[in-house]
Amino acid sequence: MSIDLTRDADDVSIDDPAYQPLFENLQGNILKPHGRNCAWQAFIKFTGPADEVRAWMRTEIAPNLFTAAKQYEQGRAPSGTDGGLVTLFFLSAAGYRYLDLDPKRLASTPFRKGMKDQSDGLSEIFGTNNKDSHPSTWEPEFQDDIHAMVGLANDEDRVPRLEAALTELQTQLAGIAIILCVQKGKVLRRPINDTPNPDDFEPIEHFGYFDGISQPLFTNQDMDKYYEKGRGGARGVGWDPGASLDLVLVQDPFAGAQDAYGSYLVYRKLAQDYDLFQARVASCATAIGTDMALAGAMVVGRFEDGTPVVDSKVPSHDYKNDFMFEEEDEEGFRCPRHAHIRKVNPRGTTPFTSLEDERKRRIVRRGIPYGPPHPDIKCPPEESSDDPTVSRGLLFMCFQASIKKQFEFIQRTWVDNPNFPVSLLNPFKKDTGDDPLIGQDPDETQRWPKKWGEENAGRKSFNFEAAVTLKGGEYLFAPSKPFLENV
Image (tube, rainbow, N blue to C red):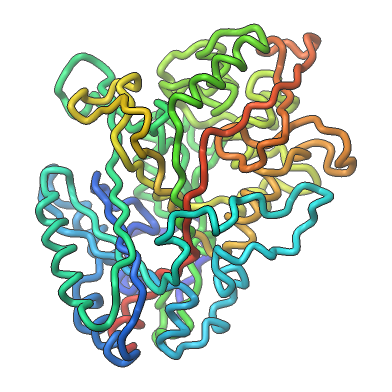
């Protein structure tokens, strides 16, 4: 009997025998991050006969695929154990067509069209149209036909293993495909104290903000760890990070096996201009009469150290995650309605919908930074560069069961919509603005609180243009292991 994907996370155990077929068939890194701090993605264009490409997938990819079952097994190993190379595999709609497989069997219109197709038909009047940069401005490799992506990951001290795996991949593909480009990401970590202890390092992104705090969790083991760390306060109170498996999994229609699931992957290369971001934070701080730390927190929704701005006007290194905007700051005078973490996860403040329906929009983020960090964000100095021409940013990746209802809805109806979450019925009353961190509409101003937490002080308009630029990407699908074994 097929597994029930609608059960709450607290009712899903990695030790339950009923879930073992699902975990054995499912690729890793979907339900839980793989934990490696170096991740490379090789984008592939098929050129040879389809039957030879299929044979390569069966003989080289399937036997080495990193599955959820393997990931959970490794999670029981002692700390410091070498988990080996992570190998993941994804196909685009164009890739399925190349293999003579009809992508219409995958029930996602955006996936079948691909990310380059920007004719989404959404309303420009209500600000929910596609505001991404045109594909003609993307990096050349992303303008080409992308058929597949191979993900390789390992820890930083084992980069030679990654290099050897990439060389082997190139050898395998000779005569049947070419590698268009390889994107290389590495986790950024900043020391909390002046100590080499790895437990005293925190993950950050290129603008210097603590990253990866709030993610959907799918098993009771991960829920237990979340609350043990103290991020969520009391269990059952405030924000619930739990999610059912149907948030991220869909049946693999080409597998021909029970409990064979996959997930849609959105991949976006996002360049981050550190100097421009800091200059705009400074201008914003001057415009609204506050300091840079608080202005930056009103952009992101958290201070650099992770402190939620809804809870405090100063950083306190308390990166808790149990707050609810609906209960604590519905009008947005502490955490503005336009703040990044509020735009992408409104936590009960979406008009005309329930919290339950709002939670179904969540995505599972698995992105990783690329490029050397700026010295000012205080990563190890040997890794940093203050060269203004250096390329750095985020290799954004997210899994979901529906690209349209999750990623595209978040990006277009929430992030890039100047009317969300207020003024949805009156699009000419601009009272929010787009997301100042990742919004792709340069013409929209935000409405900033003049004084933190003081509603009577009113708001001030200021146009904070995002210092993040889309450089390319694609919509992909993570097929199941049975599909790869029998393709």
